[in-house]
Length: 331
Picture 1 (cartoon, rainbow, N blue to C red):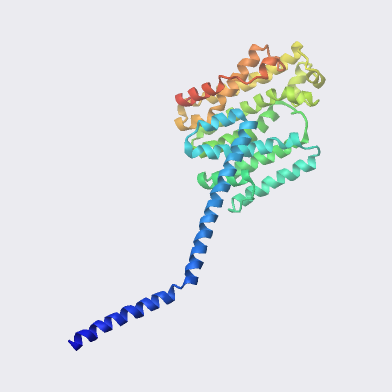
Picture 2 (cartoon, rainbow, N blue to C red):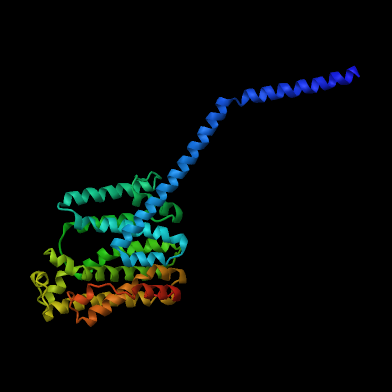
């Protein structure tokens, strides 16, 4: 009996000492510290999520206000590529608006240098605390985007700060290849497409887009007494820069527009010649062809008068056409 009591007392003593040791290890202070650390981690994660949402919304709003056609095209992409597409288009908008928002070339060069540095930092996983940079970093990490295409867009936009007309149509095509085509190459990477035929098509679509953008922007530029249309085409038809600044509707001015628009159409035809060999997934990166087609058709109906009032309004059916083209997976 005494032995039983002794054993029981020993077990109780062991439990008490274990409890005392455990309690001593996890004191109230250490519990508080652990809870504070956990709270800090939760707050940091919540803050990071909030910042990510703000950055995404910033890019979405920027593209919607400055590149509506690109905005609609991005919404029609698969979910895994949609956010990255908006980041790339926001990056393109940021660069494109530098030229129109500066009074001195030096300021423009400084802003371009910021983006060159930002790209280098993005690829070192040290993105600047700036919404577009943060979203671009996310896209680069997710899709392993090629740095060369991003830097090429910046370099070409930087050259364009010289604020002069293109010497010839070929110079405009080179500019378009280095900017618009490079953007499409990046969109193809977001979609996971690696195909030489898709790259060839992207090259021609980018050139067509650059040419059409130059035409569409002519009324805006002429209102600021600037003309960027290729000089060789203008000289061929005897049209001066002053003719465009005065918004002349003479036949020679229309002939200039006709020649430039025709070259854009040729590039679209070349791009479509690769369609049988292009993967279906790549077609979603080429939705912009719908927008280019629409403008070329409307400028033709306007008699190649680039200043015609009908060209100012956005086609309300364009989003539907973009959706149908995405559904058919053609370009």
